[in-house]
Amino acid sequence: MRSLLLNHRRRLFVISVFILLLIITGLFLRSTQHELLITFLDVGQGDAVLLTAPNGNRLLYDAGPPTGAVVSALGKELGYFDHDIAIMVASHPDADHIGGFADLFARYTPKLYLDAHTYSSSEDFEVLEKDLKQRGVERRTLPVGSKIDLGSGVFIDVLAPERSNVDASINGRSLVLHVHYGAMSLLLTGDLEQDGESSLIERLGNRLHATILKAGHHGSKTSTSERFLDAVDPQLVIISAGAHNIYGHPHQSTLARLQSRNIEILQTAMMGNIHFSCSPIRCALLK
Image (cartoon, rainbow, N blue to C red; front, side, top):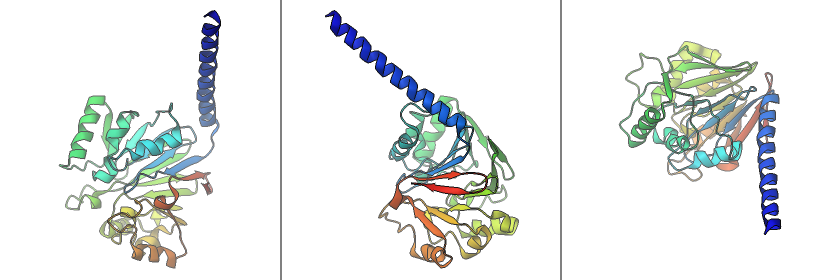
């Protein structure tokens, strides 16, 4: 009996040491990381993008649909024990962008939740509102011109929606973020469509330039116009959409516009989670 107890204690000790080493290794890697990590999460028909600054601070832009896919996708990236996502952002209150927050809050509690003050009468939005209040998460609205300092030289500018744009559709009021890390940049447009793109072009012109563009509205034909591509001039375009979805995303006309410009296209439906490691001068696709 005594030998069995000793063996049990040894096993518990070994397991405890192993868990401790995993935690220490994770902390070490985060503290010595010198690049911005960008992960386009495969959440099926929806959007979710995870940014991890060199100092370890994380921001999640959208959470995909209410299917549990975002928790599964994040689990592959962060592991079981890491529940640290400081900031969560909603581009707009469509279910395929905010539906996953309910699943996330069961495992991750952000310090700050950001949105564009766009409301919806949907059940997913009501659940989100309730969760934020119950968990005491600080909530802020981001007006155009706001800047998020994620640390280590990673800055995020809020480009849209303008407060005067009250008559736009929910898609047209998507929260547009422009991420900068040195000469590298990323443009996140939610479900912004061509009217919203035109408004951005009129205000900002080629200041919209980005190394990586996440195609608006999952590659719909109503987004990623020729004029918008002229202004952004991306090297890469990411399309987040479900395989064989009922909406026909991405639309063939959108793919044709990108292909005619020899822009590299990456799709979560084909690749799963898509990872980039970015220094201030270049981004590398991680296999």
